[in-house]
Image (cartoon, rainbow, N blue to C red; front, side, top):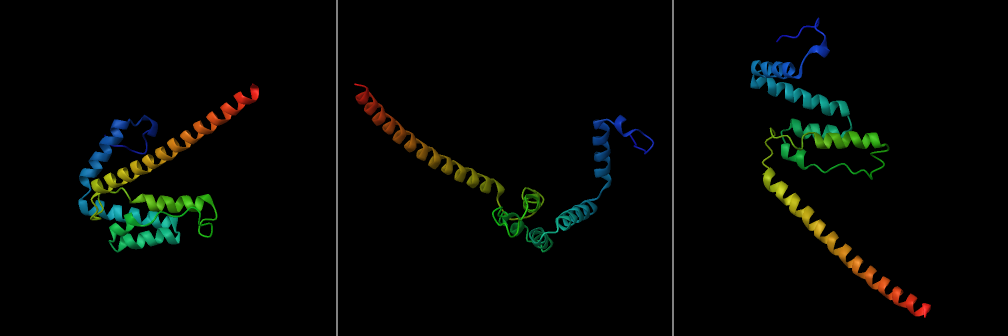
Length: 155
């Protein structure tokens, strides 16, 4: 199917759009696809324009891909850098943008990193559960003591 401006955009079916994307992808060489991707990434970071985003762009342009994905998350409590929620949100988007891209050669074993993150989260859950269990036991002891005192007062 070829789509012309004369056609009503609402009449284009999802399958037709998917087929057009496949056809376009076949015609697009790897070299052109890489150039388009490169341009889109650069324009994205430039559009945000913050020092944080531009630093990530510099790392990307220098092919320091591991540096891009390991760069620290922006600190929302830094009110000097982020006077508004919007300014923080933009830097957070910049930070998140390339972190999950599988086409970047970072040298990072993503499976191992995911397992380590999961293990760390499980350790935090275990620690929280132990604290809550301890609080619950103290709460029961206190309630038991006060319950006994109330019963004594009632007699």
